[in-house]
Length: 81
Image 1: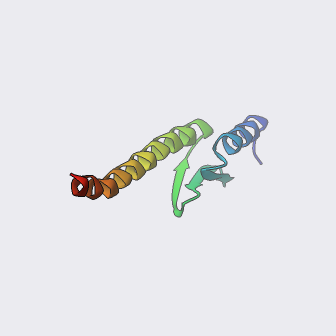
Image 2: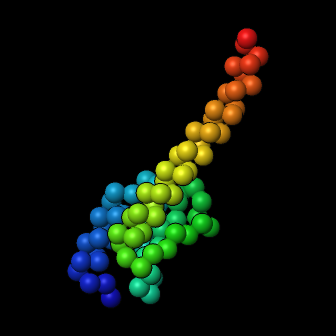
């Protein structure tokens, strides 16, 4: 059973990240997986550690998506010149 503090942290994390991650606590381990990558599980020993991992993961995913978009646009820009 989660402590009141952990329950509050879980609700807060779920509310804040609900569009991007599924978050749960299983056997004392905090876990999250991105909605677009359910097989890649982030795990941590605390809510705040998991929050930090999600922030890093989210930034990395955003950077990767941006680079993919730029790479896709680069040949178009070269053809226009």
